[in-house]
Length: 309
Image 1 (tube, rainbow, N blue to C red):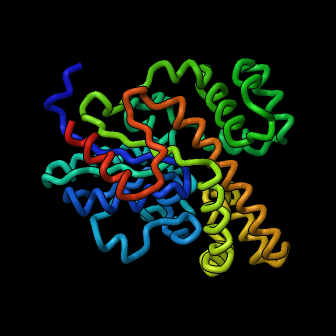
Image 2: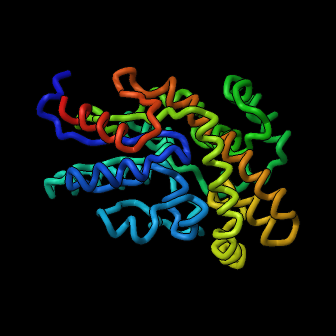
């Protein structure tokens, strides 16, 4: 495909705490850019600190889109909705003559935006509630009967994905894998993605994760306390499962000590970063550039080379 005349869209991807936001801001300052969030946790208005969303000062230094625009009580926000919003944000940015800069580490969001998503019909709310009320073992056993391949791939403890696979096959008569062969809506063929994937040294990243979460154990308490005080947030809302929320929530409720909360939160964040590493190393197109550089100026110079090609 000839992409010479397609509009350029910058993409900065990487695991959590790898320095994506700083690089995106540097690019925005140099190229009159608009920073567009591609992190599934940073969409929530209630979690600025714990999700390491850009600060108020950082957001004021360059236009930001899709950061903190979703209320915590919205349990239906999805990759499909984000992709639709990101598509509009990219189009608006290009229409203004600015450079769209996607930044984040949520592989599902990036994949959905570029490649599209399976056109699974809306599942009946009553059926969804019925499926999600099943016990863990019962849901997995039911899935094994209707979609053996999915059941074999999914651990019973992965309740969210098991429930999704089960509700789809029950509600549509087709497996989720079958639906996923018919993806629609991707914009990958309409833009020229100029990507730089940050793959920093693991020890360096883990040290940053540990330091950041130790700080968050103090700085994020108020926002987590406010989250816990709300009575309108469903128990299965995604925000309750966001990295670090269960650990700081336990600390706020007095159910654990600060050292234990920090240890548990750091471990959860490290595990999440490991999953991101795996996706970023193996799933994106091979032509996307990777860098192990740790210095911001080096990363910026590398991106400048990518943008000029």
